[in-house]
Image 1 (cartoon, rainbow, N blue to C red):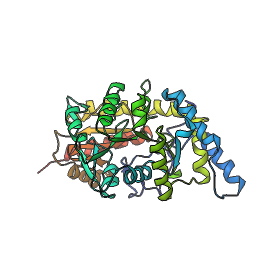
Image 2 (cartoon, one colour; image 1 turned 60 degrees about the horizontal axis):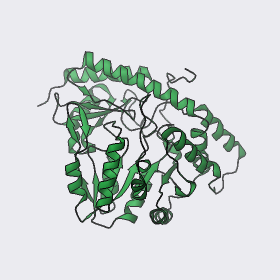
Image 3 (cartoon, helix red, strand yellow; image 1 turned 90 degrees about the vertical axis):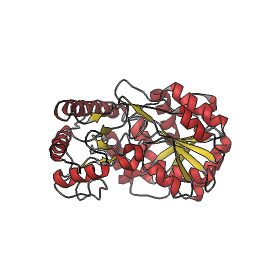
Image 4 (cartoon, rainbow, N blue to C red; image 1 turned 60 degrees about the vertical axis):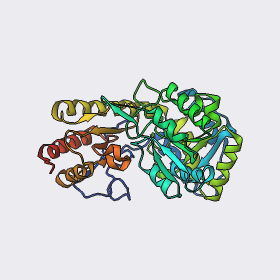
Length: 388
């Protein structure tokens, strides 16, 4: 490989949210990577910093063209400059858009188990969380379209938040599934906010499909949130884009972003998409291969050493969804025990909805050595765990 993903960078004492742990602990929870970002990005940032002046920033053509180029080349989606809005992040966009396209006490539908911050964005804005649980059968997840339609049909329902690909179950939604979602939402006048931040982190040989690319109907009813931050490990840079083909919907969201003061880039946020999408594609391709190897390592270890745990097939993201139902009915208790006895810090599945009560989420976007260390710690804890 051209890039060294085995390099262990010490993240202690760097104000890292993920690594704010005790010295003997191994954090494999929150979704950022332990890899240094692409050298091309670091070089570009250094060049900009060397300029020495950090005043207010206007968006350049490079910002827009980077997204246009990337989505056409990687995701077969022809987007236009006038569809694109800058935002400081997917979650600020989500909360701001909720305030603009729904009213207080409206229902907002999410398909659980799902990214836990969706709950916060809904509840903090005075809206009602309406869950449509995914069907879990034989180690696979699928949409319960009968239940979903029933929830969308309610008069108080105005928004569906889609996770595409789906975190934490690692599912890539098919074109047919996305088309069916779009038709149901259009039928009941429901706006789709699609979080697609994990779209570039598919397994090698697999591709995700942008919701708005499926049909003209999907494009007209949707707000798509994208960013290079997850795939290129740039979360702290706070840069993202929103793709909204419908001009009226775009105007509504854009006004909200400006009112909420999350539409102004900093000097690095403005250049990050160009440095990622135009200059770091080979880095991303090697990263995906490395993540594939880490997943194979976990799969083999669990199969041979921890057969009481089922690893859900991960088509996208670097977050593994572990079915521990043969061990526990209380993921919170198991997660706490694992951390207390071994220092391994995983996420409890319960935070993603009650459907995750017997699951753990493991972040494997770290060195292979740390992944192996984490697996050994996990086995040690599971072997000694006894539930009351």
